[in-house]
Image (tube, rainbow, N blue to C red; front, side, top):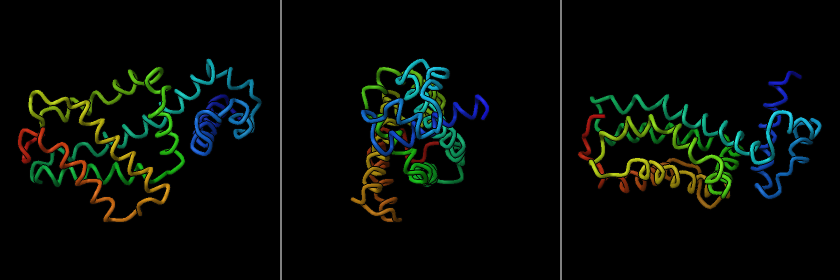
Length: 197
């Protein structure tokens, strides 16, 4: 196993353990065992457990931002009305979030933990800067676009949790409900629902 493969194995096992057991029960020992590596390798590649958690979240956050940026050009398709463009972007992101329960649960558990604010908030905000810049022209001048985009993500993660624990079904009706909830909450802040972005 190469060093890159060992590092990735540790990150992948961190995601699995956090998704299954939560952050408090994700020990370096359990993570190393799940990766089938000696625990000492964690400290070869990472400063400490918190650094390992941060890097696992960064990996997942990069996957999500890559998916958003991949589909963000739909917002420039001015032949479509603004709601249709928002719907297309939302559906692509929603499908991605639900596509891997393990990764999503790890993301959620870290994102809503004290670790996120302490170790990852600034880097997370920097990663989404391009999305904020692209979306800002669609909103009224005093709208806090960063907060609005956070609201969208929080709502999606909240409902993803409900899908995963069986409280709501993963179906077209749920997808439509979540989209309408998100869209109606940001609509008052839009310059114009037909806005060109």
